[in-house]
Image 1 (cartoon, rainbow, N blue to C red):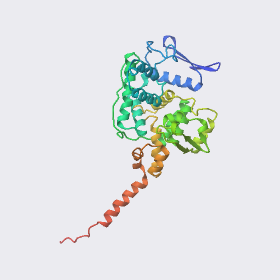
Image 2: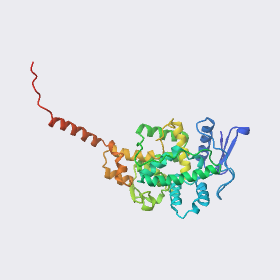
Image 3: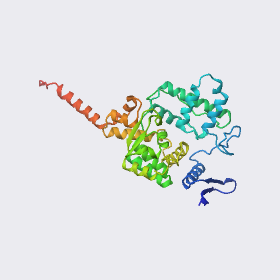
Image 4: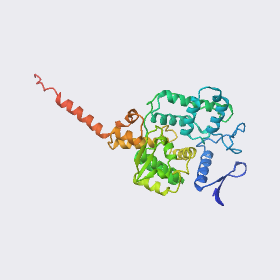
Length: 351
């Protein structure tokens, strides 16, 4: 067994000799995550991380740790942005750190990661110009990381305007597969997160930062300073969300066992096990799309969906309304009525 209890921690030990890795983890779930990651690396499913550079380390890092987005942020401020009169780039970069998580290793920021990031920014109602400013800040931080030797290549950052992507959601069969895979891998925290995200429509950061005392009277409450659009939101909990929140009610932060990076790692494992690595839309933000899509398929109005989801503009909500069955039925009825009213009288054909 590659995982061994050691006092209040767990030791992961895989391989032998020079091919052996040993890692101490605080919880069993974290140890299982490390084990799964190493096995996927050895099977060639994901790439092994390169040895980190020692040219720049933040005060919170130890020897052998991976450089994070926060490290790149600090170094870019020191070497580049501090020399500018405007603080716009620093502010834009701060938004990127908030969305991706400042604990994210820079080497794990891929084109797929950036695609999901843009999806989230569009969902927040950011204009194309605002998105491009934030992507420009991310690009500068990644260039800094490349200059420091932390990454070998820069991921492609494609600027695009709002509304150019398709909406991807989970149907009930896919949902079952995801939840069953979480059970199989022992990712209980991810399973709880997936359920809560699908049934509330909360954004990733909104759910990761959600505090237990924000759940009152059967509703999840978000104040203006806790949402990406600065709009307050209050969403009723489904039965299964209620059970999860009550089981985690002793945590100050409901998902205190997840960070942006841990969530991304666990999701990538599940994604790989399900054979979805070639599906660029199979990302965590898809869970929010799932909630909005299901509301639309249950014939909830655009105004209702916009209020529930906290969409910044009706244009964002409009992406889901083609799924509303009543609207489709109305269209069919309208075409049938047009044909009935305008049907020409039959004309006898001379033999």
